[in-house]
Length: 242
Image (cartoon, rainbow, N blue to C red):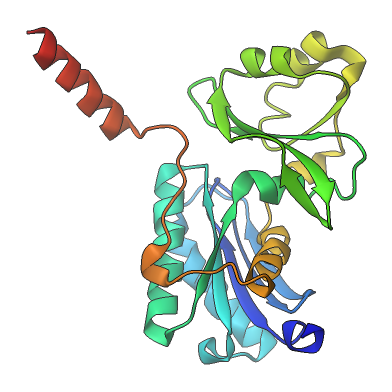
């Protein structure tokens, strides 16, 4: 079984933040990765990144065994674009897909930590997406549900020493240090970057354990309602009051 797993070819995409990244991997070996932290829409760059990586690796799309995408939480627009890209490619080629959490993916950046890891991603609107993890069987295992909260509310809930990782850490570093003091363990700046290559390892682990799905079943994980949904709820509330 292991030899076949190590020969599996995967294309993994992460568009959950402003950074867009694509990775090609063969089993647990990273073949190529493209990461662009630039202010342009994912729709402008993801297909170009995919084409470039395939060309450099000498692979064809049909060589791939399955596709993986980070499905959130994160940027609503980015997630829709990335998931639509992966679903489209997988449907055309009749390949399965694997959905990966952005929170578990960022926790991969703190390998084999003895401490609980708090994924701490910017949700905008002065809130953060967060989830606690602890390493188990070579992957970060969730200790609770994903949530979206004001950072000060979340930080006051954390007990003991905790590693905080994610793109919201630099944004709220002063608040983290003033609230938690030396209980907050903050890794080097490079650890706060979401990367498709980390999601690829999680995708391989899921696939080898039989956890995958049809492309049509892949959906984004928002955690927080979209602005459109919030407006609809507000309008319905107003109508009910009237």
